[in-house]
Length: 107
Length: 118
Figure 1 (tube, rainbow over the protein chains, first blue to last red):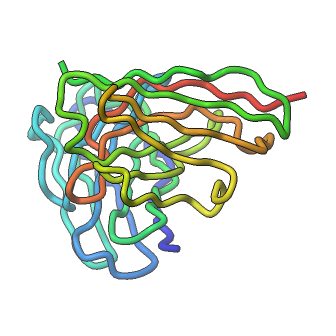
Figure 2 (cartoon, rainbow over the protein chains, first blue to last red; figure 1 turned 30 degrees about the horizontal axis):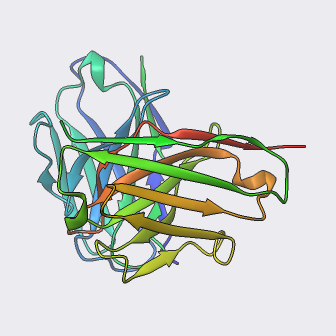
C-alpha cells in the first residue's frame, strides 16, 4: 500500500498568512494526487486534483504543486473560512489512501 | 443540483449486518464510478470500496474485503453498501462519493453514522 505522510499535523496561522502543507508518498505516484478541505461535521471538499489543477469554484488562493513523491498545498493568503483540516489522497493505485490530515488553526 | 444523500446508518451489534444506501441526483449517475469512504470518530479518512459505472469492476480495502459488498442500481440512481460481520472498528461516518477520472472524489454526500456496539 502507498503511505501518504502529511506535515505538519497542525499549524497555527493568522488571517492573511501564507500557509504551506506538504504530503509525501511512500512511492512514486506521478501527479495522481488530490487535496481536500474538511470542516467539522461536514464532508470533505475537493480543492486540487492531478496535483496542481484547481477544482471548479475553488478560490485561486489555493494552489498545488509537485510530482513523483513530494507535493505541496499552498494557501497564499489565509482567510477566516480556510480554518479547517486538509487531507491529501493518492489515486495512483489501490487501495486509495489519504494522508493523516493537517489542521489549520487560528493563531 | 448535483447531490448525494446517504441513508441506513444506525447502531448495530458486533457481528450483525447493515445496508447503507446513497441516492444520487443532478447528474447522469450511470456515467460515473462511485466510492464509499469512511471516517472513524475524530480520525482521518479511509477509502472503503469503489464500483465502476456499469458495476463490472469492484475493489475493496483489505479491512472490509469479504465482509462488505458494494453494488448499484443505475435505473434507480442508487449506490449500496452491504456490511456483514460488523466490528467495533467499523464504527464511522460513511460517505458516498463520485469518482473522477483521476481516481479522486469530486462530489460527496453528507455521510451516515454507523455505530457498532453491544
